[in-house]
Length: 227
Image 1: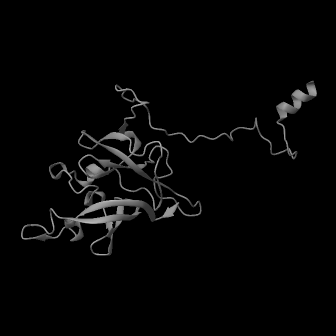
Image 2: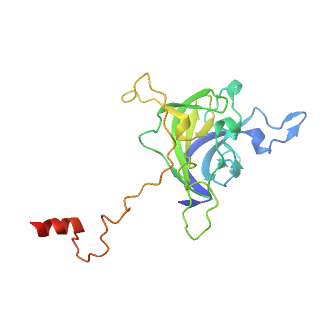
Image 3: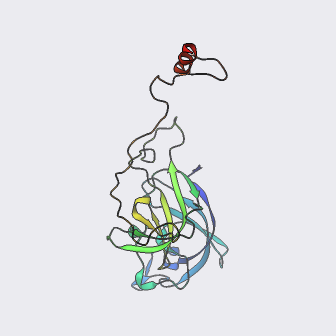
């Protein structure tokens, strides 16, 4: 589990140049608008209450540029300029914690999917990786939401057909797997998981008063004595 910053797999990207000028206005338009700079993702940064931020190696400059949101990037140079989405439609939630992990779920890599955005429209793409968070240290006051069952969310990074990246939780995404998922799927009506499950409940299976290496429960001992 990484604090604040986590490594990303080598990911070729194109950076919208206006973000490299901090969205500065020049001659009544965004400076650098419409231009792209080739780069490679290096790390992702997670700050509670802020959008995920990405650090990028800009190849033609030999420079590292930090703290850009998903809306600054496209994964292909010939992206659809007429169908670009704003940041709030690409990423549903701000980050939940300073502690994050990055994982590529093998069963989903490259899998086609679509997600429902805030405008109630679906946008298609394919799965790339997941950024998840937690609160790792019990001696540090937990003021976030990452450990609350009903509030915890994953950030599934999707490479959209329009060339952008999106970061969406599980409950916003519908997946398509030709060998497993039927062409017509049901609409889930499930509830959010709010329960913390544990197997160490009650005293029926208590073994704290038994010092044997291969211990037996009271019920097992009583059953043995009866026989």
